[in-house]
Length: 227
Image 1 (cartoon, rainbow, N blue to C red):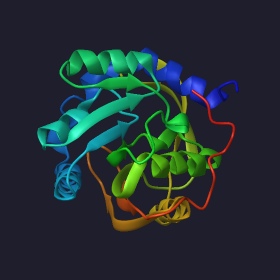
Image 2: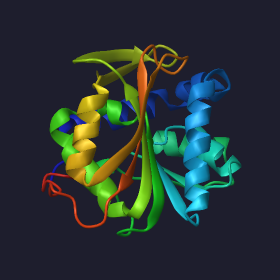
Image 3: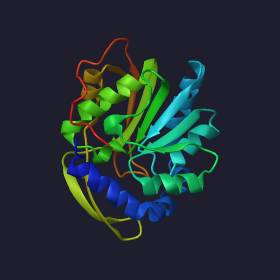
Image 4: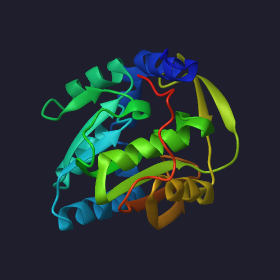
């Protein structure tokens, strides 16, 4: 099925800004201690459960995957944008990065110990969140963890320029933590922690961690998924 327009726009936009994006976010975790704490706890829980592969979905230029590797987690990155993946491979040549889409997550069922979507769900429209989280549920093993970071608020805005002033055409969607928790519950996850914060990453952000329940998700993956 032909890729939806918003996916195509997202891929093209991040291909365009890949180099500038990498330069802008390279040292961002140094300025975000609360985010580092959330990632450290996630890594500790993954290791305590026996370890295993962790996917950073929507990995951008690879900084979060690299940080998790530094915390002893077998992390790799997936991104829709080939330009971003090329940049991530250049920034972190010892790590694994693959082109792929969270709307059609190409990993084996129950193969992941954990999954991170770090400010990458912000470009997914509401109608696609359920199918995306169903893919996350399929990919993560029972008891496995997901860690989501996103902008808090209501509504969306169209981003037309960014990361060095390059043209973009992506919508940035803000969500309330309660809505994200409800979506996770519908997808077969149990929310364990939920934090809101302000930092260099987001004027008002949220970090939600959840664990996959046994069994199947309550909502099936929608048939339109592609990429």
